Image 1 (tube, rainbow, N blue to C red):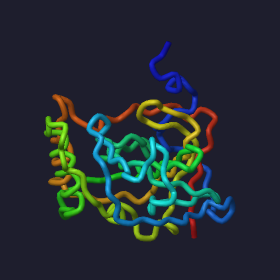
Image 2: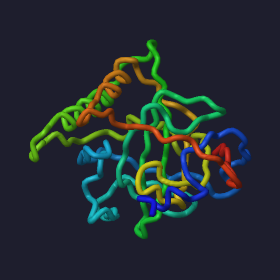
Image 3: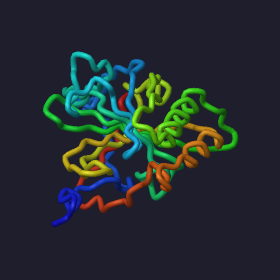
Image 4: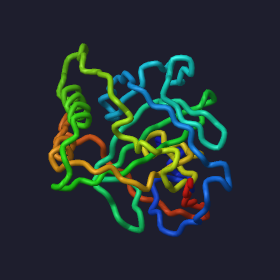
Length: 234
């Protein structure tokens, strides 16, 4: 039996976003309502994830969790976020430097992932927020003690377009790209990448945990019969 049976499904992620159906967000009630605040996260070394603190047994607590997104009339609460190097989704065959995943769940455990590409370039300035976050991740990965106090409060707004409710994106149904590879996940892939400096990019790439680099990427999968929508929210 496969260790993760869901990984054998036909609607796996990531994909190469090539042929899309372009629509207006108003046509299918795709418009975002998004709230992001400063939030405390707990670093999970094994998966290089930043776990949102107010979770109860992995289920988001809507009373305490002030970071949420409403999509197609449903509200999802932030569960964790993490990075992949290089990016996982391809856009017309192009693979960017990194990809950030913000993973949300509703009160029934249904998931939505907001993905944003990171493009590293020598002309891009350093980001104090990224430097802080990557430094914390590196400190936790290097800590061998069971009492590593390297958690912190991060401004998620630093990583999200300020006009997210008007930002164009691609959306389709796929899976988590990390175990257990659960299908039925709604993907929202933002079209506007975040520009990062070569220094910040090098900092993340240098993070090592038990002899292995973190943030590994998964191969792309066939779109098969899925429809990828290209949404313009204007």
